[in-house]
Length: 122
Length: 106
Image 1 (cartoon, rainbow over the protein chains, first blue to last red):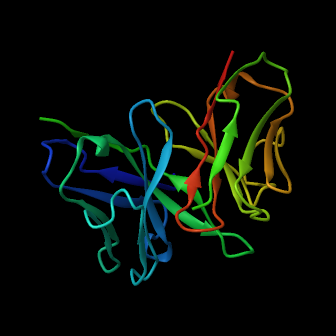
Image 2 (tube, rainbow over the protein chains, first blue to last red):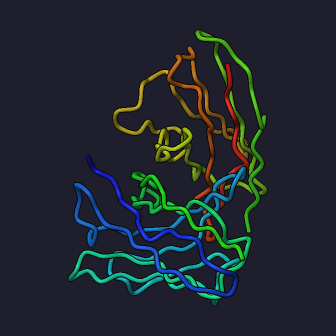
């Protein structure tokens, strides 16, 4: 099945750090731009970060800018989200999503993983 | 940032009903809205992109349309497998933003 596969979620104390990983099942990760999207308990979807296929371009939501870093190593077919200075409001299910582009070069998410849970609590 | 307002937040309907979910954006963004279905414990699934293009493998009872800044997702005849939460997403500008979600219940 074609699907991103997330890992690395855990319970972490406020102010702590955590690194999430995303692997590709059934497709070549390095061929696609990728994003992380999260869902806090009882809430909707919130886009977190984007990285281009080459890794040269990144964008972040204001809520995580300066604390989270998205990166990739295409030689190892790996994608990561480094999360530092974690806060309670970062508690969420984190999804890795594969990007495609339409005829107007706008991004949509055509494949999603099942998510990995991050809990920030003392 | 472009604001996107989705309605209703929840909806009760029966098998066979026709259902419409609406998203309104804070400015004209042409056809830059996508629709997703999400069931608890599962990966979200893309239904429609570019406002009206059906993703491969999605049943044709799902359709999307746009008039100005109003985008609609319609399910022509509800099936038991369609009970889920639905989200719209604007892809016109960064940051991309999602609607608040519509929970579709029996």
